[in-house]
Amino acid sequence: MLIEGSKGSLNVYVNDILTSSFPLSKKRNLKWYQDSAEKAMIVGMRNENIKLSTMIIVFHEVIELNYLKQINYKRMSSEDHQLLLMAVLSLIKLKQIEFDDYILMMNKKKKKSFIKKII
Image (cartoon, rainbow, N blue to C red; front, side, top):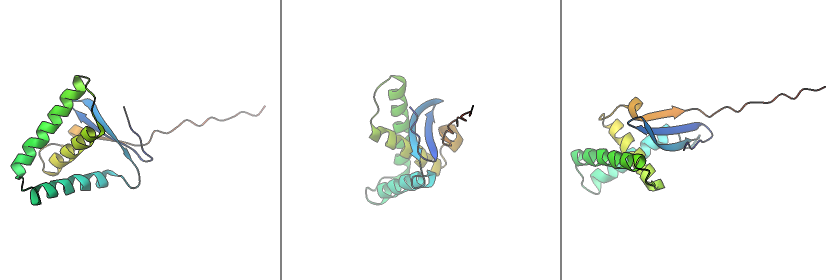
């Protein structure tokens, strides 16, 4: 399911299967989502004393578990979708995976305008 905002959508693909979709708007753009993922990583390292290598392993496991839910037609909660996006964006930030392999940004779908003919 694609969730579209006023500026389009941010779609997460895992192994070429659409796994999550997030709306893009003026406030919630790609930078906003990246900043949220970065803040979560910083909190994990500072407050929870989690090592970076451990975080990388956990992020990969989150992606794999959500992928398995998707292919087995299990319901994913909104928290699962958000956690998946955070994991993907964090691994992109850490240069563990490529942006183009997991993220697709789509502009807002343009609606057809109908022209009324005057007879």
